[in-house]
Image (cartoon, rainbow, N blue to C red):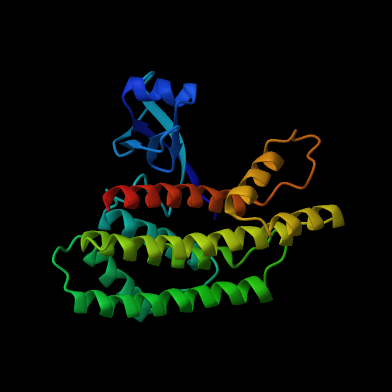
Length: 267
């Protein structure tokens, strides 16, 4: 299941105008001034319906949320439930002891005064969990995935959830460098997955050759190339469009970019 929901957020009318004029830009849940990069607003307040002049509608992967500063334990736990349901359709369950650890970590996202010893202990556990599920994802990617049947996809969501949860714990502990390390780690893994999915989804030699070529590009250039492909005429695309999984992960990267901006602003 690939879910990119449209969520409506309240924004002051003057910010909305500057977004549409190009003076401001949105990265995930962050609105910043384009020229200076200064954060001017965080998307937090959700609305039931769009209000002309005072709201914007954005696409959100269900595993992310508007901004990491206001991400709650309840929101993270709901995302975990989505992943469990998705895996259940494949008759796969997360190991009970792993679920216990993830839920323990989620509970810690709102606890203040975590000691250095506790933080070091949870880091070791979370890194071990991250590496294990990234390993499962990699095995599915290498051994089972075929075009149109990306069985690895749900397993990538687990490391994303783990990294975001860990980052929230580190933010709560005012350890912003550690929080950035978690987000950067999962950012790199998502980017590599996107590149592999694009190549895997290619059915012709020109498509495969192009995606292999751009997979060697750094993040910004790779994303620019993807935008060019996706915005090409749908009736005459230059290259095969990437699978929906890549679009989903692209949105994840956008929110992670926003998280990194927030963390830079916090420290």
